[in-house]
Length: 81
Length: 385
Image (cartoon, rainbow over all chains, first blue to last red; front, side):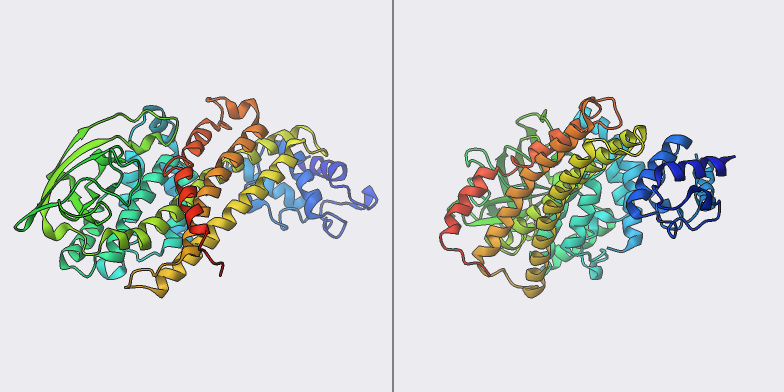
C-alpha cells in the first residue's frame, strides 16, 4: 500500500524520462533518471504526503535509490516520531 | 575543532542554551543555564594552554564555538566571546608571571568568568585612553573607575580593568589589571534595557577595587590591545554574528521547505530569495574565516613577542567588523522577508525578532563610525600585501 503510494509520487514528481510501467518497487531510480534536483521535488512531495520531515542524515543518495528504500526511510521517520 | 567537541556543543546548544534564549532575552537576565553547561564542559578555559590544564584551542576554534552558540542564543555567545577575549589577554601577555600562571590554573579549576572594563565616562568610548589611574602603595593597588559599560559584571569572578599606569602618567600610558570581583565594590550607574543582546547585562558601574600589585598584567595595555584585544574581539564577535545570521537563514530555509511542500513541483518565489541570502552569508563567512586565519598566522609568527605594526592587518580587522556588522542586519532582514508574518510574530517557530534586534547591536558595540574614522587615517599610509 505504502509502496504503491510512493511509486505514484515518484512517477508524478521525479520527472523520470522512462515509461512508467518500467518503474518497479526495486528499480534503480538514479538509473531511471532521478537527479539531485528532482530528488528535492520528490522529497517535498513525500514529506507532504506522509507528514514527515527528512532529517539531514537521510538526505542521501541511498535513501532515494528505489521505492523500497524510500519506504524504509519513511518507516524509520515515522518510528522516531 | 574535533567532531566530538562540535557534537557536544550542539547538544549543549539544543538542550541547555536554546530553551532559555527567549527568557534571557525577555528578562534581560544573565544566561545562567548556558554558563552552567559551558562550565561543566570546561569550555570557559578552552583557550588556556594545555600545560595549565586548559584545552589549548586556537582563536579559530574559539571563534567557531562562539559561532555555534550564536545559533542558539546571541547573548550567550557574546558573553562567551567577551570572556575568551579576557582569557586571551592573560594567555598572550601575562604567563611569564608566576601569579598569572596560578590565575590561569584557577581559570581552569574554578571555570572563572572574566569580564572587561575598558571604556570610561568622559572619554567617549576610546579604549586606548584612560582617565582613572592605578594608585600603588607598597604591594597593594587601588583603583576607582566610572565605567559606562561592564558587561555581566555582577556575574563575573574577575574584571580586567584598564587605567593609567600612575596618577602622573599620560592618558595613553595604560595598564591592564586583573580585579577580583570579591575585592571590588560595584555601584550601578545605569540599567541595561536595550533592543538586543539583552542577556549580556551590560550595565554601567562605578568600580572601586584594591588588590595585590602582582595582579597588574606585566605588559603595557598598548601591546595587549594591539596583539589581543583588537584582533580577538573583532574575530570572535564577527564569528558569533555569523552564527546568528546563519540561524536566521536556517529558519528561512525551514519556512521555504514547509511552503514548498504545499505546491509540489513548483518552488515558491521565496526559494529564490533563500538562494540569494545564502550567497550573502557566504560572503560573511569568507570575511570571518580569512581574517581569523590571518590572525592565527600572526599569533603563530609572534608567539611571545608583541605584534609589529602592520597597518594593512589592522585595516582588515576593522573591515571585518564594519562589513560583518552590516551584513548580519542585511541577512537577518532578508530572512525575515522570506518568513514573512511568521518571522515577524514573536510566538512562531520561525520568529526572527530576537535575531533582528541582536543584529542591530553589532554596528554599535564599538561604533562603526569610530572604527571607520580610525581606518580612514590608516588608509592614507596602508600598503596591501
